[in-house]
Picture (tube, rainbow, N blue to C red):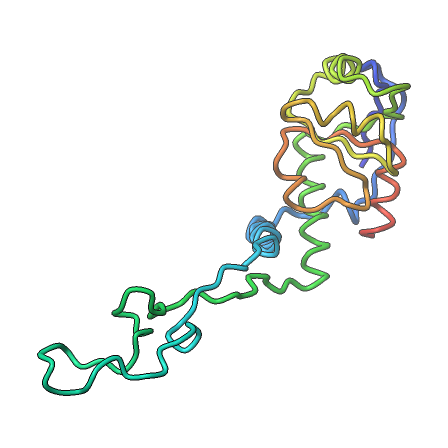
Length: 205
């Protein structure tokens, strides 16, 4: 598969050949859904916790005698029925992460990238660098490319681009080594540099 390369000014600058093993696979929506759910589940903290009657401090002595008081019998002041007692069904710290095989995860990424290329939502640029952190300059370049809701992907760290993009709504930035299913399915367009495309092909081939 061949895609046209654009400059940051939006003009054509040749073409690049994409690997069919990465950008030409079939679209499997159930697998992509599973990968996205797995990603969000792994991000849940699961740190909430409550105490049962055995965890609450005190309550070792019987509060009053079994018979003769006219009250309902009670064995401890830490009963869930008492104020200050434990919870009946207490929330516990748990791990929400789900297991997803490496081959399934990698195929989900290839499937998303292939669908982006088929829908003309993947834009390849020769280079995407800014001389200094300037949000206005980045907005000008994105306007020239005809994109608004976009993910910018570069081969390495680019602090000027990161600082320029973080102030913009619907504009995200990540490195090619950090892409995940969620960041790829969220935007309308994905803008990648040629070096980032080659790095992704080496990673997922």
